[in-house]
Image 1 (cartoon, each protein chain N blue to C red):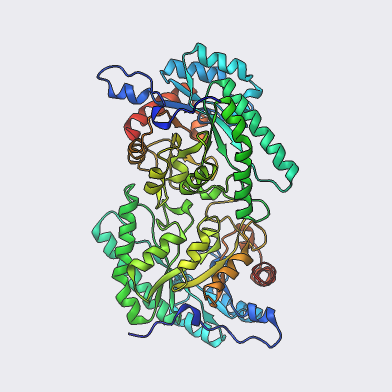
Image 2: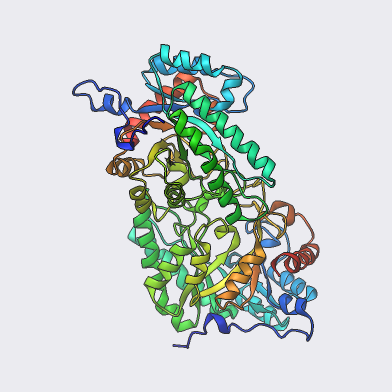
Length: 298
Length: 298
């Protein structure tokens, strides 16, 4: 079993001396859902996204597993290496709850496979979207999540991949994740008590929480990722309603400073599901993303 | 100053002996937004809604202030009395945060007026939707809510109207209420420390909360209302996406039993914003509402 690296030791890319912006930019990661909807039939493939990041000077990328249907994971891993990029995380494992034990076993199997893909891709973080409620039973569904993660953990440790529980906004509790708050994700990670499990915080999901400062402090030992975007008003869509940083109401700088305050120095992923952004040329989106990241997150 | 009645003493209508269903039905209340969108240019007016409730044997009604533009509050009060109905609550006060002190004073003024309307209508509960975030400052906006309620409380006590803080689903934190959890609403009510302030729980807003049992227990002394509907999947709309009881994933019976466990025996409001229901004849909606209420809440 490999030794798990700690949150605070996640390496950052070297900065150009005297260039604070360059140091910040060196932590920027493109979550690929930002530049193409997951179910799109056309658009740039993962290789094209890797090339675009390299052109834009973005050093990190976070693919989605769906992309491996078009770009096999070995090819993706090679492209990332050749471009000098690193992979901040793989999206996503999870979706553990199900009505039958057989389905729950199949879900665990799928997560074991996701762990392998993460390892092959060269990332040490697999993001978990834990799954929604089954049979109106929130407590039971949450237990299924805990049991599912516990079942995946030995293999994750074997492959050197950490499982990052991502609390999802409560509006996704029914269909995507019964883990709805940052504090609940912390508590789950603590009960699982393994260096191979932690929490990934996305501002869109957690910004509203009156307990967020306590939760960030509670994640000191296990914060595995930090995602930025914005909450725009009015919300154009539940799923595809996120905004570019600076277009909404979230105090991004405050949250970035807070996670750094508990030792997080890892990559910062931009993950935005938004129809208008998807309609724009990829290179243009990456430039806007860099600009807004520097203006609003730092 | 009138003496505030306690949660557990909210009277219920007499039940027909041997008829459990009748006892349950006697607590049913129509929140009028269920049968007509607030901004509709046509549709039944408040008097017609009162009459429909009387026809359907529904003993409680909960109007919205917008309706007084069409039906003056004195007329509404008379119609309710003449029909033998009672008013479970008035929707709504709140919306305290604002960028300037002048605007915040105007918001308090509007709430004082809402208290008068509630008193004139003959209800002792004014529901508060507290207002969204101002200037990306969640903590500051929450303080504005607390200051606003504190400024309204003396008048509420004078008029015998209790202010019911309704925690809204976190997806409304930006534009409708920075009070996003049941626990937060409890804490706010406790800090205000008055028999004239409490909490109103709507299942749509709070069902997902991992701390809900603790929150319900925490509301033992100040639960002023309980609203039912359902969370349907996929959510058709953020604002108008609620479902009829039984069409979604919420365990309504469990929550009703839980609030009764802390002494709540008051009216149970059905409040549903849903395009499909709005398109149906009012009497048909009331019959469906009664049927589903008995099937899923009791």
